Amino acid sequence: MSRATILLCGVLLANPGAPCGSATAVQSDEWPFYGHDAGGMRLSPLTQINRANAAGLRVAWTFHTHDVAERHGHTKRSGFESTPLVVDGTLYLTTPFNRVIALDPETGAQRWSYDPKIELAGDYGDGLVNRGVATWVDATRANGRPCRRRIFEATLDARLVAIDAATGSPCADFGTAGQVSLRNVPRYESGWYHMTSPPAVVDGVVIVGSAIDDNHRVDMASGVVRAYDARTGLLRWSWDPLPPNSSVSIPAGNVRPQQIPPGSISLGGPIVTAGGLVFIAGTTDSYIRGFDVETGKELWKALLPASANATPITYQLRSSGRQYLVIAAGGHPKISEEALSDAVVAYALP
Image (cartoon, rainbow, N blue to C red; front, side):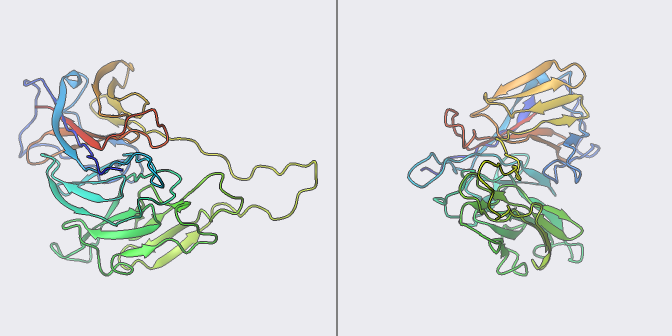
């Protein structure tokens, strides 16, 4: 196993005559949710990168996280599946080792990192992955107070952590020293019950689901959905979407109806922009592509360090007026024929 690099690349449109606008009079748009907005529409209103100039996208910056693992002993293969957030002038992403990293979205320079120190050799059915974080502002706290804006991560080893968006320090008033255990569910088994996706935050409540390993035993842990107070970490409610399988024996010759539908490998989805473009990199080859939203014509593609099992994002900075397109390209933890990477790549217009 090696702590390899996660590469964040920014792409620039290469047409120097393309209008970029001024830094003082430009529409700013961030990416504050996993799916861009609270409804998960993945629709960006930005138009600087559009059908007329998308063919000129170029790399703007690259960042490496150094968190990559091949299958070795008890350690599972890693997959870089994080969808970054951009809010309040900072880009937040997670690594396969569940570290949270804050970057300057214009340069890719690291501002801080937080390590929840998960057990890397855990028996996680999805491999070493994390798909991102959620964020929330405590409006009752004054600007500049610690943990006014919080970053929430659900970890592979079943913890919900809250950290200060400005510094990366744990929010001491959340749970115990900034974290809540998610392991108190019936039939919990370390590693087989885990979290890979970001929480959802609404009305001061943090909501987390879970991932359950397939084909291990008939009495797996409950796939409960739980909601916690975003300030204190206290449990607000819980809900089990599926009743446990029946323990009643089935007479010989009869077949128990399947109660829980099977899952499948999921690759990253597309985003749509007001510039008339669809961007997607969730394919088994190593390209990110831009398509005309009306005709489906491929207008641009760029070779990534590995295939992207993640969703791209786009944002625009108030300071420079530059729009960026960002994708995490790390390969897939369960497709061993694919190369692994730790790269986040950003594209933009010059």
